Image (cartoon, rainbow, N blue to C red; front, side, top):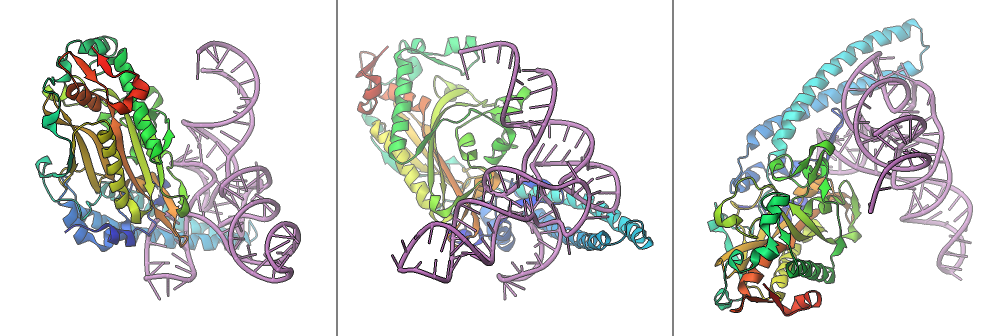
Length: 451
RNA sequence: GGAGAGUUGGCAGAGUGGUCGAUUGCGGCGGUCUUGAAAACCGCAGGGCCGGAAACGGUCCCGGGGGUUCGAAUCCCUCACUCUCCGCCA
């Protein structure tokens, strides 16, 4: 049985951001609330077992106990040292009394140093075990092992009704003139296309449309940096596990962002909101850079998977009690974009075995690409509950003045290349023109894109 | 890229080895006064961890990390960032 968000809310009040003072290392790489974790170990263990990650809660529990014992012991010694320090400040500096005290405290000091080394060691192991614990799936998430167990949550439009002349976009005559992958390969490498002429205009029209729609829905528009430091990449979960996904500028120790989620979520890193300020919505267009190690065949043809692509992302920082409702409105908003573009889609409620490490609940939106005759993922809307916020140390002062961790959500609204692919395929007419949806005309200016 | 100066609580700004988590001012919150407000006066006000049902207690945090010392905001090393001047540049 999985845990309800409501119950989680009760326990998340505890303040778990650790500055382990003794080692001096600021730890914000945490996910599950410590107190909650300790008190509900069996339930959490059962819930986590439905995810695809190996978790060793037993060794975490052992280390947690050792850590706490050690902390108590060192703090006791420190208190002793501190009290003596007060006495010494009142003694004459060179007196016999003073010198005796120094000798005594030398003993305490060296003992403390030894103990500190051991504590640091345990704390390191403890931290490693702690950050290896994934977020807990919500009770409403279907239990399943693979993508086959995902639930079709909603469908819109009729895949059969799209153009009878639909072709896979890369087979449309003239495609390479307008999405120039060969020259992109020459200039940069595989997966870095040039969009040319009206195709560039169409990309820009989509970006404009998404940004305008997001603004109208209450999201604050942002233009973030597209490179980030290690701390930011860690907070949103790209580091350490998915380091290979990102391009890295070693000279400056900066990472090219794989999604705007990284800089935008980190915008409020280490900050505390007033409860009245929540929820906060943001929307950002950025190019996204992904190395995507393993890939093959139909998945990487044409626009299906690129190393650089454009995406508009939305992020929400919300009150914990509201996050699952906010997820529904986020999903609904992303779906509305596809409806306005007149593109058939389906929404998948991802099962426990197919959601990611930091996710509590996730919907994927897939658009129908009539030429390829397959569904393409264009958006992923996720509730991270407090997982990311804990890592990023984003909190708020609640109605009672207590500090709690916020919940964060994000979703694509939307990723450009696959939306573009579906548009080109579904709207292709016999004469090789592509009909442009009404909502894009204010920017595209024409009814058809001509190859 | 070169040279110099800095980094202290929401902000400003003291503190150069011993009850300093830190003086003070502003801002904030609560109260007295007022018909109301202002002014004045009084009071309360940071974060993490450990213990605790809680009240509360302990401990750590003066940009990050390391060192010296019985003891570090204060001394040393190192890194990051900010500012000033020079160079370069959209």
